[in-house]
Length: 338
Image 1: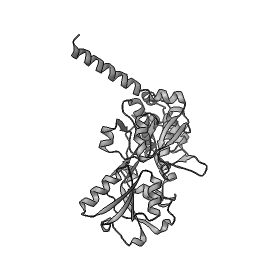
Image 2: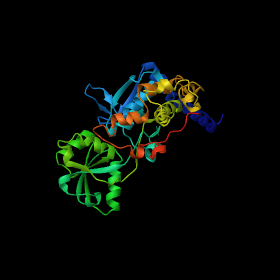
Image 3: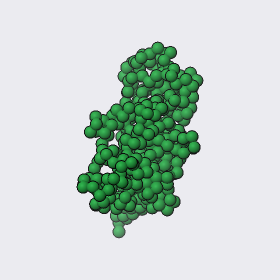
C-alpha cells in the first residue's frame, strides 16, 4: 500500500471517528438525564432568574422545549450562565449541549466556529439608548459620543460600520459582561448604550431611573437570534431545530397549552401529524411520538412564550412586530411537519 493511500485511509478513519464522537449528544443527554443549556448571565425576558431563583425567558423556553421533546419533562434542564466571550467555547468544548443565549446568527459564526444555528427564535436589530437629558432624537446626532457596549459581540463591528458610514467620531467603552456595561452606562461613564434592541428594553429596567432613558428609533443591523449546537451531530441539530419549529407551528395551527387536549382525534391531517396521531415524526429525530404534545403542554406555543416573557403585558412591553407569524404581518415562519 503506498503512502498516499495509507494517508487517505487514515484520514477517512479519523474523520469517521471524529464524527462518531460528536454524534452522541442525544445519548449523552439521556445518560445524564437532563439538557445542559448555555444561557445569558441575566437578561430579563430572555434568560433571567425569577424571584424564586428559577431561570425563565424566551431563550430558556427553547431549552425547556428540547427537554420536553426528549424526556417528556420540560424541567429536565440545567443552566450554565455564560458571558458573550465564554459562550462559543463552552459549546465547542461540550460544557453545554445547546446555546440559547440571545446569540446572533452570522456567516462567520456559522462557517468558522464549528457550530450550527438551529433556527431563529427572535428577530432583533441593534439600537442605541441615551439619557433624555442628552437632548438627541436620532443616532445621527451622536458624533463624538462615548458608547458603552460588550466585547465578543456583533455590536462593536456594527457600531464601527455605522459611525464610519455616517462620518461620525465616537469612543468605545467596552466590557466583557453585560452587567458591567449596564452599570457603566448607569453611572454615566458613557453617553450611549448600544446592543440589540431587545437587550436595551430589558436592561433599561435595571437602571436607577428607567424613565430618564429612551431608545432611539433607528435600528442599524439585522440580528437574528437563535439556538446554537455543535456541527457534526445532525440528529441533535434536528431535535433542537424541530423543538423550536413545533412551538411556531403550534401557534400557526391554533394549538395552545390550554386547548391541545381538545385537538386530539380531529380530522385535520396537519394537526394529526403534529400530535403524533399519524406518521413517525418523533421517531425520525429520535424522540417519542408525543414530543410536540409535551412541548406545547409544558412550555406553550411560540406566541404564549412571547406574551409571557416579553410581550405587551410584561415590563418589557415589546410588540410582536416582525416576530409575528408570517400569516399575520411578521416574518416568523417554520417548516411544516410532513
